[in-house]
Amino acid sequence: MSDGVREVLDFWFDDAWKAHWFQPSAAFDRAVAGRLGDLHGRAARGELDAWQASAEGCLALCILLDQAPRQLFRGEARAFASIATCRSSGGSSSICR
Image 1 (cartoon, rainbow, N blue to C red):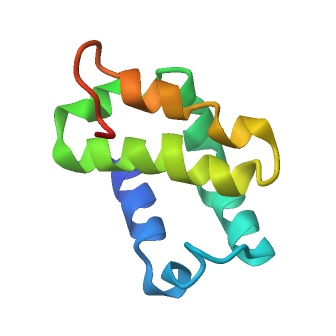
Image 2: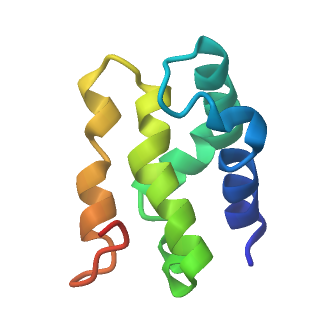
């Protein structure tokens, strides 16, 4: 498994952050920006499409393209801009459905 995939999954599923998934938290937003911000940008540009080759990679892409932007761009329309990328990634298949 790619180090980037493991980094995303380890961070996102860390018990310390799960409580912040459904409640706005400035601390969580900052942590997401610091740990996942660069990877989100790369995923949104299609640079991490190779991750679709594994189930863990697909899950990491879903987190980067669907969940992380909600913290990265809270309160802005662009918080939802990469959802379409997530759903259309991989041509006819969808990694987020």
